[in-house]
Image 1 (cartoon, helix red, strand yellow):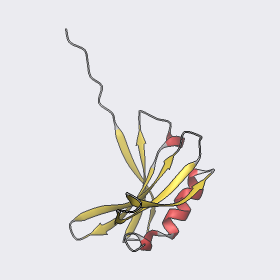
Image 2 (cartoon, one colour):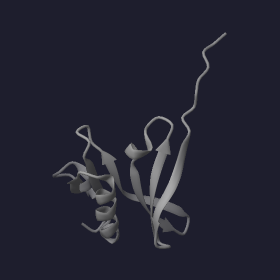
Image 3 (tube, one colour):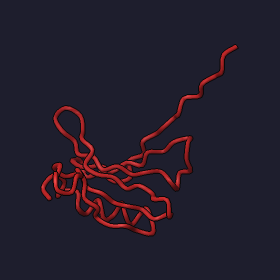
Image 4 (cartoon, helix red, strand yellow):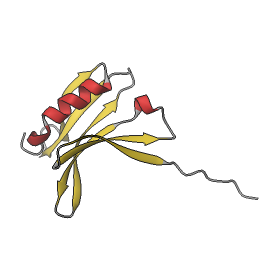
Length: 104
């Protein structure tokens, strides 16, 4: 018999929502809930777009990044808003900057 493949199960948990923007935690069986990344989205007429994210780094800190128009000089399409000791601090900072996406 062949090997059984276990699919990754994920769940999106909305943690902030102001009717136009919303922030989700992406929970997964692959990681602890306390390590789940957060993603900032904006609602559009047809669906939604991701505007930024908070990801845990190898040292345990959390980076908050906002998506921007691609910049050849920095070779990046995101800007680091800050590095934080706690995920909640990164989420709050990204949420406060949500209206700046693609305008920096």
